Image: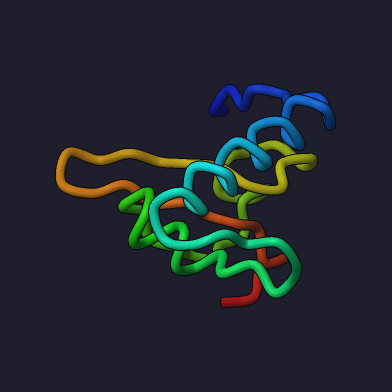
Length: 84
């Protein structure tokens, strides 16, 4: 079973606010929804977004998302409840 690091809500919020500020300095401020999530992932972070059944894949029932890094690429995977 893969070990998944738990983040507190305030840690996630602080990281998200820092990311939005950094993105805003480079591409233009994001002051209200919609937030260009896919653009931030691909253009700013160099990530690709994928959906998978993470509880089954990682062998733990309470995982909502994960980041996987390979030699050639990085990807962020979000649980889709078994749907693709």
